[in-house]
Length: 270
Ligand SMILES: NC(=O)c1ccc[n+]([C@@H]2O[C@H](COP(=O)([O-])OP(=O)(O)OC[C@H]3O[C@@H](n4cnc5c(N)ncnc54)[C@H](OP(=O)(O)O)[C@@H]3O)[C@@H](O)[C@H]2O)c1
Image (cartoon, rainbow, N blue to C red; front, side):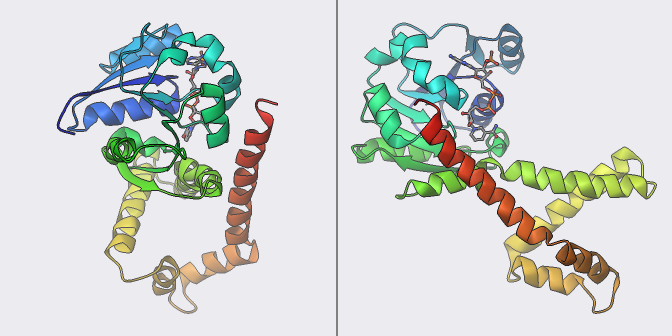
């Protein structure tokens, strides 16, 4: 980003703070203010060098607002932050399940985006999927793409159901990988490694495996097969996973997450 841009983030929880941290760690010229009602959270945010305020500024002078409150707050947002009514810039919602049509209708704005980032945005290794509102200008689409590119990979889609899938996959992704990581660490500790050794070994395995997959040409299952010497030790574990239908369970779990995103969209304001 060549010229300075001002972004206001409403909601300084896990996601709002991760986005803000990614911005300040990037080389982009972006100034950030977070609106966060909780005093302790504001102190934590301020300690990271980011401005955190209790009330939304009046008037809002930022060019972009990112809405990172829980989805159930959305119906009350205009009431809680009446300054939004006079805001003429770009609004990006990262709230799970809140649809584009609800965003444009309730906020009475056309320059609106629905996006799903993940927590890796805080270290500029995030993935963000976005869909622009139907009347968004090309200039604003480029702007939001550039903003999320500073946080990692930015992908635009044209079908909104993919945002619900991305909520399950991209938003939740770090949780699933961490869940699997926790199981590997638990095994290492049961086997007798201390916590620090177990954690550093497992993280290096994750790093090495993602680097191998990125380098190619193996697909994940091909890499899995290459590790499994026929009749060998790894095959014992994978056979057990297959017997327990772990892969099917993971796909089913993500589908449950997708369905909940769709349901949230139907439920939260009716
Ligand atoms: N966590 C993720 O990895 C992730 C990924 C993708 C998308 N999202 C989406 O990001 C949004 C935030 O999720 P989160 O995990 O960051 O939740 P969170 O940690 O609970 O953060 C939400 C923050 O918003 C604050 N808040 C509540 N009402 C507010 C208001 N009226 N004005 C300003 N701030 C307000 C909350 O303060 P109080 O605690 O005082 O209520 C809290 O600090 C959700 O809509 C979620 O769907 C999250």
